[in-house]
Length: 168
Image 1 (cartoon, rainbow, N blue to C red):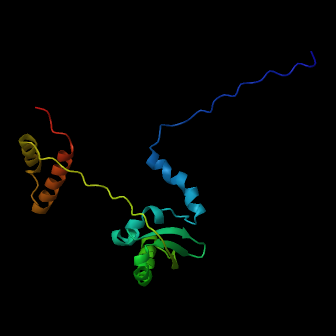
Image 2: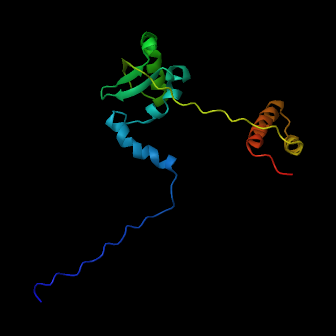
């Protein structure tokens, strides 16, 4: 039986270890390669752009690419281009403050349409039932500081009001 082929061994399926992970925890690492392709070794400049420059500026401009020499290409709405050019020193300062070092040395403005980021809608809270209202008051009765008490009451009303009303 010299022409007989050796028996094939079946490949075992790869074993997965650990528990399932939430996509929000895995996504930044998975997207890092795409960010690096556009020069963003630090993806937080893209993901936290609204925090870095503020809501008003984030509505009219978006970062596109960061070159190796520290030049950040920013797409800006045509009507806001000149104003953004005047705000460049302030934006560079905000970026440096955010990262703790001068990651960006200058801006290169490119006019074009800017899609505004979606804003989360605030949830409507329902009015608390008399029982919930009384329970909240009882929980806050030991808080002496008026400011703290008011803040905790607002928080309690928001949390309880976001839940469906208890069935009687």
